Image (cartoon, rainbow, N blue to C red; front, side, top):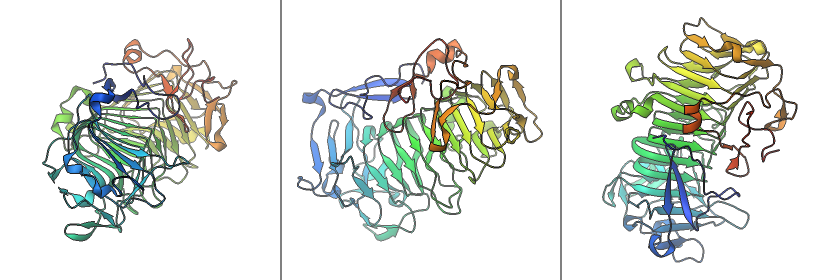
Length: 487
């Protein structure tokens, strides 16, 4: 699932993938080209919006979409109050594309779940679970949707107390409803979307494989007083998150930012801020297929910025292993965690990793771990697990654990410590490195196998993607290389 080291080739430099020549899909670390030959790939184009043939989204014949069809939803000042299901199959060469057409100031078309109406010809189950749904329908005939691209839309407000219009009347959304709910599918791309104000922002079920989530803004989701709904809750076989901005959940919501039960998981070049935990990477409790897959035992997290705010629920940044209580289901593999920048603003203690058992290992290299509190408030581990350390920077005074630690740590001698890592302007959220930073040229080369499979080629950017990371003989520690595009 992770055989290719090529990442992002074919993107333009202005924050949106080129669509006129080709669509690039990076699925579970592999690169797949969807070549869009104008005479072959575009079967039909359905344009929605003011002065278009289809005034409303529910006018589109979703039940008869075919490979190569495009649905172009144009921005308008008022939201589209519509909900629908995509249950058709494109092909590698002719994907089905559902794309927002931006407004004059770059505004995304808004799909609002409040009082949303479904086209009468569509019939699908679990209507209460999402605003846009992929997979699971009677009309169109049930199938495994494939080669679907959903991009450049703001999708919001799929949660109680909001209601929608169904064939059965006006009904409430479920607590675990999502703005985008993928019940099942394969070869899916969700790109450049804003996903917010729902129970789960993005929900992907275990009958899904080969998914790319990129360039999205996912924030402001969750249910007040509940820890069971998250900004993203995913369980696919092969999934890549890249170039996304994850913001805090809705006020009073105790869910995690990104909770995942996938096999073949890659999280790279994202900004992930807030949540009970930034990353909750646990067991595939509903899928023996995932647990038996070789990629289940390897997880790759690199090039990300992880920010813990003061007052967020849990003091742990990353949880890796499981939470079902069935330890034989736990990941019990290796979390490869490298070239990340981790910042905690907590006034109390912070823990970088919770590994569920001593069967889990974190391979931790070239990361910055900075806390605004005194360094003694920073711990690397909780009570269990194996840590293999490379060349990390940690605040002076850090400790292995705040508790009784029963695991193991190797490579302590390779760590650097200091009072400040030399960020450009942390008060304003600029975590690039100054020229005088102790992290500049202080990293170590990645192991050859890791460099071959998952090299660090890009960086997160708040305004554009992808931004290439400067490559030199002496890598910097953290998510940003000094002298890159952000400086």
